[in-house]
Image 1 (cartoon, helix red, strand yellow):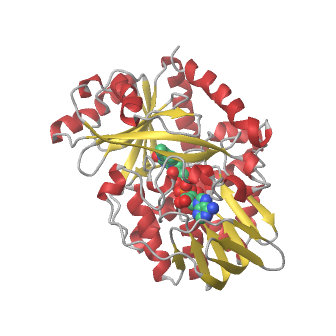
Image 2: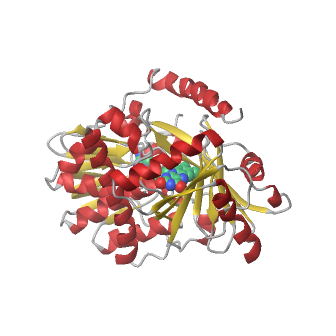
Image 3: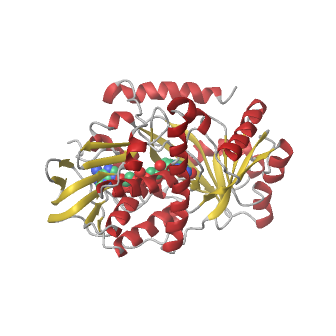
Length: 438
Ligand SMILES: Cc1cc2nc3c(=O)[nH]c(=O)nc-3n(C[C@H](O)[C@H](O)[C@H](O)COP(=O)(O)OP(=O)(O)OC[C@H]3O[C@@H](n4cnc5c(N)ncnc54)[C@H](O)[C@@H]3O)c2cc1C
């Protein structure tokens, strides 16, 4: 019999258990919470316990709403507990591109929201004393000499037109001073960006939400919902009646997002963690302990952990299932940048599912007047998913200005409908990722 749960919720993982990641091995993990049993009532039911859902629930409770959060597995089990931990500036597309596509005013509003997202993450960490190894700084590294002039022009634009002075250009010599590799021709350093332990951040948001009064349920996949004057959210052993519902399932959305699901596409991405490196060796790789991401279509992104492992993300796949041996899948990408790690042991390898949109900009919307959804952060969700939760919460409270800015983005659906969109995307992405090699 087909599982009533979405396939992506189970196909690569064990029910109710965190993946075998470095993050899960080093997180401050609480005991599992009970699942929904019988009938519950509340003002708002949030489905999904990643940054979007946790931030929505926390902000709703702070606004005085009686809030229930239902998570299929564990808090931070999804992309929020598995990602590269990079808190970047701006949206996933440059301001130059946003201005061209959406007009200067809308582009500026999206920049302001992205800046507010970074501030919000840092403020939540401070206010709720979340111990998640937050560190400043991120380098963007150009793997083609011809990209560097444009990158440096973009720095000038952000400084001159957006008043963003925390970003500086890096020449080839300067980036070579930061990173122990000859792969890059230049880039930028952004001291307003940051990196963190993503699962500890999610768990900290979970603790804050519960302390604010949110009733959190785990190991409890939502099977469906009905919307009307009131909403009913169905689980295996009970249901939640609510005035409003927030759907915060992102890459794992599948059938729950009918009406919005064809605007986002799940994609799997992978990370490995080396054994802890001697201090001097680690500083040779990344001198100032900043996060790094490069200009490849299938981005390489990496940073050092608090115990000086290199956490390296690279390689993407456009199939439902993860590769059988993730360590061997990602390691060549790491060695292409850092051949000096050839003899270094890989202790962990894991994958996660994120959601992308065609525009690579987030997808916010109403599925009914009292059912809200946000997702499709396209690999830029540490900040954007956190602020999405705040925006969804304030929308339910009647402040709709930022929701309207986000809803105006209008991502187009992926072609191919439910069955063909994945193979079509796979073909397109494979084509672009091949271009990285030439
Ligand atoms: C490998 C990887 C690396 C990444 N690196 C970065 C990075 O460095 N920087 C960055 O900004 N972003 C990065 N991202 C993206 C970022 O992690 C996501 O955008 C962000 O975590 C999305 O948060 P979310 O809460 O919307 O979704 P998720 O964290 O995926 O949470 C969704 C939750 O919904 C639950 N759910 C789904 N269906 C149901 C259901 N039917 N019933 C109940 N619960 C359900 C799932 O179990 C899951 O816990 C990365 C993602 C991956 C996978």
